[in-house]
Image (cartoon, rainbow, N blue to C red; front, side, top):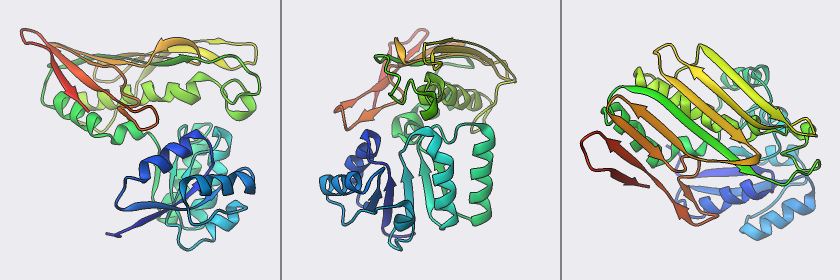
Length: 288
């Protein structure tokens, strides 16, 4: 195994800053280069996080032999082209969600990575957190009996601004692409655990959405039905504070996860956990 993993970063926004902050505590990973929407932004990011250098273009970053893997933290519509460029250069890719703007784009990126033989992953960081691994273990061990239903929400209220990426369709605006993918991912994970698989795909989806003046979906919800009979209600919003929690219901109780999407936030200095509520037992709190 390689002793050190050297990262290049595409993007200089808050989410890229979260990565830089997190990697400061890593014994194996360090960022060695960054490119932004302008050379000035890249230089400022490098200075802020003490990086050895920055690049004026994506081609320059991808030509850097010290870069092993690239993190893509740019607006949604840029992900596919940037991921394909990284793969063509033989770099591993960790791409922020949503992976691409649609399924066809995702298939193109996956096919390219397989053909080139490089690492590729969508950056659903919550799926890699120890808290979620423990949640999966408890469910597999039958903590609440047979899994029946999932309820998951990720919604917040952000002031409408047509120029903001959340409301701008040209920048991939809308709740579903931005944070609705989290509840969908969680439901597929739990439905998979119910049948001993890494994930499961729904066989039926009934959905509804409210669209704002910019055309972006500001509130959306869906009912999912899986082959095993497990069901899920998922919701998302960018203009309504619908919350950011998840509940899993089983034959013998339920599990409440107050914030599965950010089990541990360096930016906000918080940790969370989950509670197991089993019939005939005292509630059990599992901390992150």
